[in-house]
Length: 285
Image (cartoon, rainbow, N blue to C red; front, top):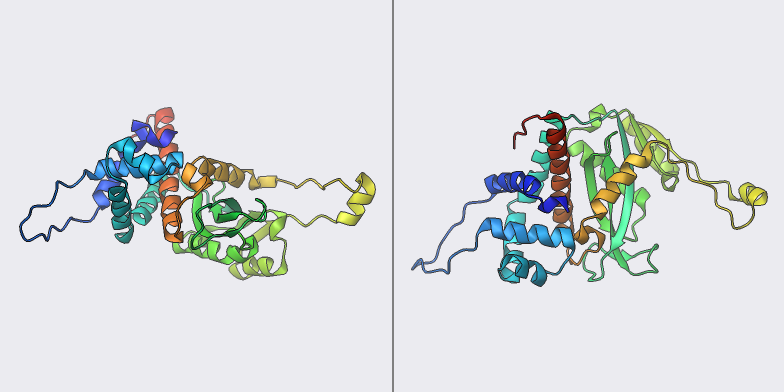
């Protein structure tokens, strides 16, 4: 996985290091055990994100205790490190390559969450087993620009407005002219959301099953036109390569959201590194 490649890991860690809160040592005698290196802990957190392993396995990989990794993750989460990291990664990508915000695509992706917890529910694509999902918006090149997490049994249509608000929170909505969605979003309420925002929505219509089945047989399914949505399908595939997103063992939505932020930050960094390798530009972290 490229996230653990030194060319990718190093610039991400340099940014994370600049965002870490100062450590306050309030022990009256100053006799704590030596604090484990932040870089070692970050490497363990990334290893768990990439492989989808348990905390124990990730801790053994970097040679620390699993409790240390969880505490450091929570400490950085409270300080907003992962949110600021992905914001800086998006800003760097926009500055160097440029986001194509005239057209966006929105889609959801469901995944396993066997440990349950908040923000999970029975999945309708996995025999009712517990799962979670993300609703993602990408630019015309398939770069994530807004996302939210939810339980697997929440209908994608109900997440559209919150997804657009996540895009708007970054100041991108004013540049959007068109949006592409699949036929799962073919509903008057969804179309009304885009009408109110002034965005032209291209939503595939639901199949007219009766006439189609009469012509091609009862078992036939009308093919779904992909159009310009293939970019978001590719983005969902990229994110699904991260083991902790594909099969989340976190029990809180805030932890799954942190994993999304970290995964997208690495995804953007990989894009920047490849762009730098191809065109020989200098990346500013």
